[in-house]
Length: 328
Ligand SMILES: Cc1cc2nc3c(=O)[nH]c(=O)nc-3n(C[C@H](O)[C@H](O)[C@H](O)COP(=O)(O)OP(=O)(O)OC[C@H]3O[C@@H](n4cnc5c(N)ncnc54)[C@H](O)[C@@H]3O)c2cc1C
Image (cartoon, rainbow, N blue to C red; front, top):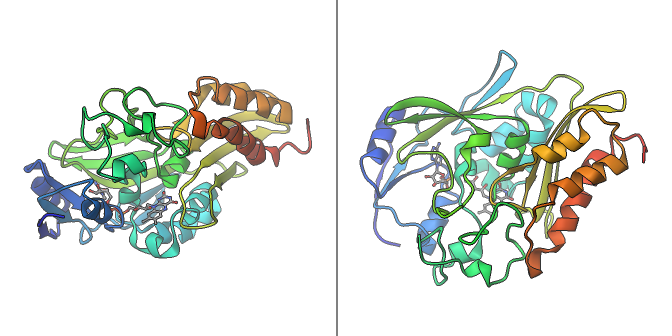
C-alpha cells in the first residue's frame, strides 16, 4: 500500500470539494471495505477524505418515509425503533450482513458502495476489467461458484455484494447525494449499473459525489416483508442467493409483489416479469413456481454456479410459500 494523505473535514461541501478536485481522492466512512481494498492493492488513492465527522447519521420518520443518514451505522439502523416494526425487511437484511463488529463500524453509505467480493477483482494477480479496464476477465474461464447468472456479459460476471441494497431495491428506496454541481436524488432502480463494456463503473455517482441519505417509503400496515439469505455459514458470510419480498394481498389475491434478489446478479436484481406473473392472481405454490421460472428465463449459468438457478427458485418458494395458507 502506498502512502496517502488523510483529512477529516467538518462540512459535507468541503468533503465533496476535496474529493472532486483530485482524480485519485476518495471518501472513507467506516473503512471496513476501503482499507482492505487499499491494503490488498485493488484500489490506490493518494488522498482519503474521512467523512465520519459530517452530521449525516440521523434517522428520521416523516410523511410516511424513513430518511436514513449515510453515516448511520448498520447496527443502529437495524435496531432503530421504527425499522424492525415498519421495515422488518431492512432490519433482517442488515442483521444478516457481515458480523456484529463490522455492523457496528460500517455505514449505510459505505455498504451501498462496497466493491464486489469477486476474488479475481480482489486478487491483483488476475485479469479484471472492473479493477483495470481492458485487462480481461479471469472469472469467465475461472471458478464461478460465486458469480452472477443474470446481468453479466463478456466483460464481467461479478456479483453485487450488498444485502442492504437488495432489501432497499424491493422497498423502492431513493438515494440522496451532494456533488460538485449540487444535491440530487436517484432512485435505487437507477443507481446501480450493469457491467456492459464498462464494468469499472459500478453506479450512477460522479467522482466526488457524496451519498448524504437514503429514503425509504414505509409500506402500508399489513404488508408482508421478508428477507431470506442463503449462505455457506450462518454469519460473517455473503449471500449465495438471497430474496427480498414486499407483498400485499387481498384475501388470497396478490395486489402487489416487489421482489429483489441477491447473490445471482451483477446488481441487486428486480424482475418486473416475475412480479407481473403473480399480480392479480391467487398466491399459490404453482403461481410462485411460475414466477420463479420467469425470473431465471434469461439466466446464463456456468458449470460451477448452475445450482443457483434452482436454488433461487426454491428460495422464492420458501419466502412467499408461508403466505399461501397451504394453497397449491
Ligand atoms: C468479513 C466481512 C464480511 C462481510 N459480510 C457482508 C455481508 O454479508 N453482507 C454485506 O452487505 N456486506 C458485508 N460486508 C461488507 C460490509 O458491510 C462493508 O464493508 C461495509 O458496509 C462498508 O461500509 P463502510 O462504512 O465501512 O465503508 P467504507 O469502507 O468506508 O467505504 C466503502 C466505499 O464507499 C465509499 N463511501 C463510503 N461512504 C460514502 C458516502 N457517504 N458517499 C460516497 N461514498 C462513500 C468509500 O469511498 C468506499 O469506496 C462484509 C465485510 C467484511 C469485512
